[in-house]
Image 1 (cartoon, helix red, strand yellow):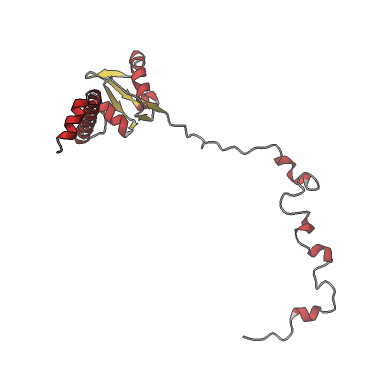
Image 2 (cartoon, rainbow, N blue to C red):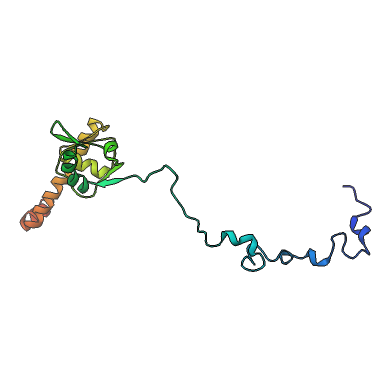
Length: 182
């Protein structure tokens, strides 16, 4: 590495501020009237007064609507209303519920449904799928094998619930189950 023989510092020896003007201007942020927005209500007011009282809000993107969801309780309650207003129609003993016509994005599994419905152009949660198929309904886009599997699972769950409720009612049956393992 080459050693520089005469450095600028050596040239400036004897010159009080080394080429940077008045000493008061070489200080830290104090020479700018404070860091950041400090002084915005006092000596920097004219730079910031336009931003006072303005709140930034988080708005959803323009054109993006909030997606509407319905529970199974809502669907079973509204089916009759939809058929009366002709937004839903009866097809093969089921009520055809079209998500595009109704403006509904997804059906959730809360509640129960006894009315057989045929769901089209909507997402359906897994619990809602089981309950719709149990009510002799159909979901468009669902394969037959999936539908049969869901019906089987739902039927098995229902059988377990009835066995458990019978065992709770009849203590002898419960004792028999425990004794059968011996």
